[in-house]
Image (cartoon, rainbow, N blue to C red; front, side, top):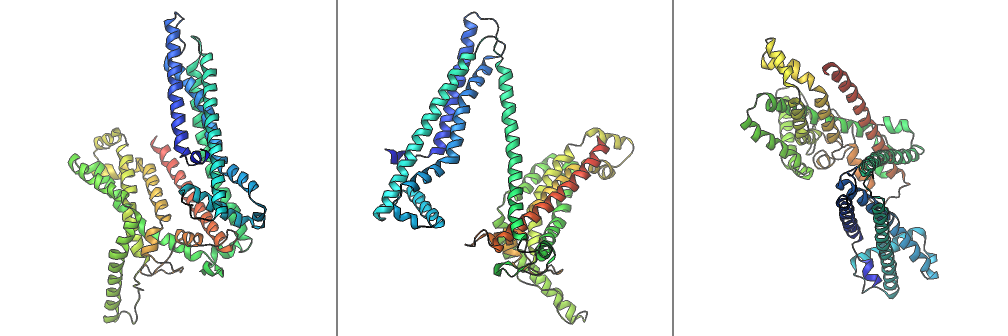
Length: 471
């Protein structure tokens, strides 16, 4: 029985129980409030629904706390109890070997396919399932008793003068505040983890050599000069924005100011389809179509320059994969981020500004150039910033179309690599987390985070300036 309970999908079961508790408690609280009215009590301070929400909150809160405790500690408690019951022979295993063995036991328990294993492993897995089943029963019992206790407590407090609405609103404020705290704590946790691992890396490799070194060969733990990675990242992002910024912005201006309703109904959804295409599809398109085309054009330019005597040797690398191919396709990918958001902010510009410009004799193009676009500039900058962040963080297109060569080259037809590609390469494999090769990935992530933060600060300054001008 305990083994079967250990196989229960506890996550969905806990969510279902919380939903049931909330529904039942809301019904109980609402019925209680309605009976107070029918019994001749004075007019209620709060509507019956607020009484239901109040009871539901008190019923759900203990259940949620138990569910969180189970999600955070059940696995650790199960493994700790199982480890304490293992035979003395297992004490010879190292911490890493014990962790691997327990992972195998947990995997076998989830798959229920361990009948052909040795007797010791089978017995250990069965005991693991029994422990899990016991914890499941305990969690379910605590949830039920906690929810019932909260329901009874809240129902007894209901009365005609009870301020249920105020308490419910305070409870929702607390929930919103908790969500904000979780978001801030997540950001702080990301920054702290990046900083800690990066500091470990900079103890081995000087930060100056990392930021300004021109040779990157982290796979052999020989050279960690990341300047070629920064160069490749920004060069490809610059090519992408050279494509996406004008096309996306001009598309948004056309759709919002010039296109008729029929044209807008067709063009805008087609543009937004680009945002839903998987990046791996863009990678295939870049590898199979754009990269060969770029190489062919580069070869033709080289031959033309040589044949006309303007050059004695090829000027362009014309490699099968290139930064130009990746940047062009990446620019197509981020066009919807610019066009859709810019279209929304341009449409949000008050019509009175346009009417005032027309009244002063401005043409439509002059109104768009001198009034509409400056008024919408904060939103346009936000759209461009989102597109830049999307381009800098892209990995698949670069892997497939730009190559993995860490170099500094102004030739866009040569293959380059980016920070994100190297992070993926460094974090895959079996290298330990205390190895400089792995730690360098955290240093790269920290630099990428810092650059994005700088872009955000600059954008906020510009937005603040123009917002004050047009408020």
